[in-house]
Amino acid sequence: MHSPEKLRQPSAQETPALYRKAEDNLEFIRSSMESATAFTGVSGIGYILAGLSALLATWIAEQQPTLQRWLLVWMLELILAAPMILLLTAVKARRQGSSLWSSNGKKLLLAFLPAMTVGGILTLNSYLTGDLQRLPGVWLGIYGAAVMTAGAYSVAAIPIMGALFIAISAVILIIGIPATLTMGISFALLHCLFGYLIWRDYGG
Image (cartoon, rainbow, N blue to C red; front, side, top):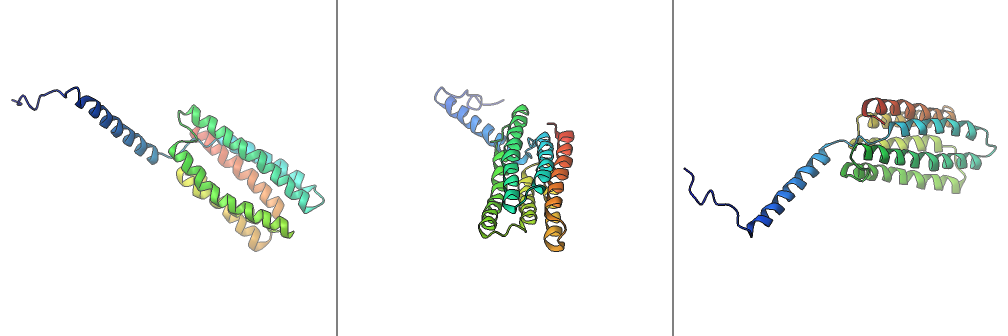
C-alpha cells in the first residue's frame, strides 16, 4: 500500500512549476533530436538548375574578349545560382516541416560562409592585381572546402561532392589543364549529378 503522502496530488501552486519543467524537458529533447539529425532540406532541383546555368555561363564566358568580361560573366552566374539554390532549399525545408533557419540549417549556412568569404577576398585581390589566370582552380578549391564543411550537417552526398571539387582544383592548379572549360564542366556535371542523387534519395 502506498502512503497517502505518496499519492498526494500536486497543489495549485506546484502545478505551473511542473508544467514549466515538463516544457523545458520537451524543448531539450526536441533540440537534442534536431541537433542529431542531418539537414535534408538541401534542394536537389536547385543543384541541377545551378549546374545547367553553369554550363551556359561556361559557353558565354568562353566568348568574352577580355578576362575582365570573363570575370563579369562568372560573377553574374554566382548572383543567379546562389539565391536560386537558397530559395529552393528554403521551399523544400518548409515542405518537409522544417526550416532553413533550424539548428542544423543555420549550422550548414555558417559552416559554408567562411571559406566562401575567403574566396571573395581572393577574387577581389586577383581583380585588383590583374592576375585572373588562377581563379578557376582557386574557385573550385574554395567552393569544395565550403561544401565539405557545410556537408557535415547535411546528407552524405554533399561532402563527397565537395571532395571532388577540391580534387579537380588540385588538377587544374598543379597540372595546368584548360582551366575555364574544366571548371565550367565540373560545376555543371557535379551539380547535376549530385542534385539528381539528392532529389532521388531525399526528394526535391
